Image (cartoon, rainbow, N blue to C red):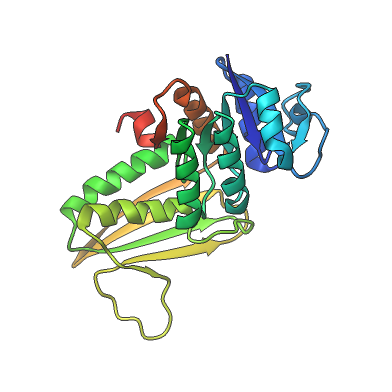
Amino acid sequence: MIKAAVTGACGQMGGLIIQNIVKAENLQLSAAFDIVNIGKDAGEVAHAGALKIPISDARNIKNVLIETDTNVLIDFTIADATVHNAPAAAGCGVNLIIGTTGLSPHQRAIIDDAILKNNVSAVISPNFSVGVNIFFNILKQTAKYLSDYDIEIIEAHHNKKKDAPSGTAMKAADVISKTLGDKEYVFGRHGTAPRNKEIGIHAVRGGDIVGDHTVLFAGDGERIEIKHQAHSRNMFAAGAVKAAEWVCGKQPGVYTMDDILGI
């Protein structure tokens, strides 16, 4: 049985991840971390039933991971927390599933370095939805044939999301840019803004939108829109738990959802 720990256990994603761990055949919850509700039953906080696993202070993550003999840590928090959590877990020999978005290049380098130095395995992705990762693959194939079309990315999320554009929108842009050669990114437009061969990226924030991503390929006389819409956050949690089952036992290194899906 794989022992899995969760950071941000009191948040929406943390709760959904715990619910999915409880349902998984090959996983069991070993620890839960947050900065609130310390000592409360993680299962009860996550509406998954009493699990007799207390929520531990995230500042004590190393000791708890060692004491619980945890195999994998799932982190869907914020960049400033993940850049602390991930190296701490890697230093304990714990594998990682990281779905945090908004990591700066410097933060990502710190995390990657900790993974490689400590010989652990990790899956890092801005989106753990199976559908979104198929969406990325479709974009790659489409860009090959529509390289001379104008490309715009529009993403929409709920009004509580802190980072913009979304990690998924940025990954979509990177997939297209890599396929076509380096492209300039333009974030929104204002005033005089003549279009060149850039990729335009636009963020919408409002209400309780789970996550919509549309990529527009616009040519003379026609356009193609490729869209992914998330109806529930549970798809992200289910994908993360799938990744946690997959990553344990893999050779040390940093993997993506493409590796899990065989894309």
